[in-house]
Image (cartoon, rainbow, N blue to C red; front, side, top):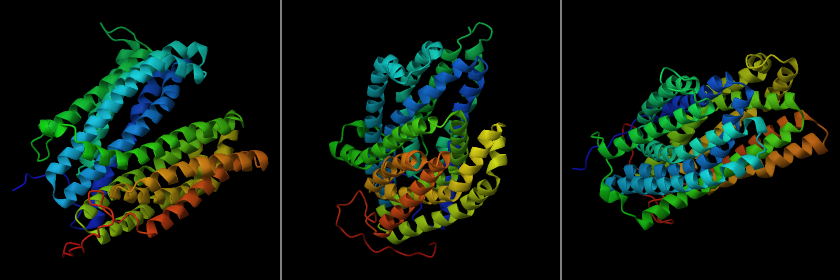
Length: 468
């Protein structure tokens, strides 16, 4: 008898309950990550405005690096979920181990590149002179933490593919609490611990990243809960690694392209002055919080699609996506309605400047319901990811920013003389067009094949049980 595998079996039982069980820990983890970043900003803000430059500038660089890690990690997660659905635990373990090797190697390479190029990167980004030295120290410590973060992405991806999103949440809770506790101690000093300033915040973050990686590895190699990697799984498996890369690289490129696109978009927004930039920043912060349910349901649907395609149940895989979309409607549509009618008072909670609040109100009046449409897109992208057919993920992510939003912002705001409203309309139009494209692509059914089977081999007819 094969060993009991941790996680949740999404090939049987009520889909709505199973999807929510997988989704809600991912939602909480996303919110915790926001708190993780806010802790540095909160304490560094007490050192002065120049200290806040360090996390702000570093975040843009880190985001691009993490985009590659997230894509490859989700590639491994897809294979793990499909092998779980197919009842093939040894291949499931090999897929997880090969993902670990790929991301650990990539993380070390990026760390070395980042350390070597830290100074020129900050010079290219025109980091203010009064904040340059502190930001350089901060960035170097962040680069040291990159391999740790990549390892945790592997653990989180494997766990989510198994249907166990609660375990990574527990690790996140521990590290976020620890970071919040040691941040002020290392920044300001306490007892024998000297005052480290900006470097202290970076060291605290790096230490917590190391802890999250250690806990993840312990669970992967020492857990007695049913899923455990063996040392033999770490032997290089070219075929399995190629499968991980085939699924993960398009997602990595799509996410990296999105990160670069947002960086360029900020440059376009900045041309309209600080009030518009502030409104854009506040609006994006609120929109990102509103999209947290979409992140959770996207990953849950990806796991459900992966497991059910692995189990040769494409009909149940498709049904899980529509149920996930229905759940998202119940959660996100009221939130978007709220921002549409009450965008101004919500923005005022972040900043009291009347001009910024007015721009924010216009932003939400124009974009709110397109945000709901993009939340729907995220659920569909989860289905593509779960099947291993990730080309649509790459194409749609890159097209939204580079083919639609950035050119649209320039054409409407600048050439069309619409001003800031043109920026907001470019956001709205890009979300709506990509939503239509995603639905058409999803309807073609090209995603209804398993990445662990040869393309062109029909999936077996699903076995319907009373639990469905």
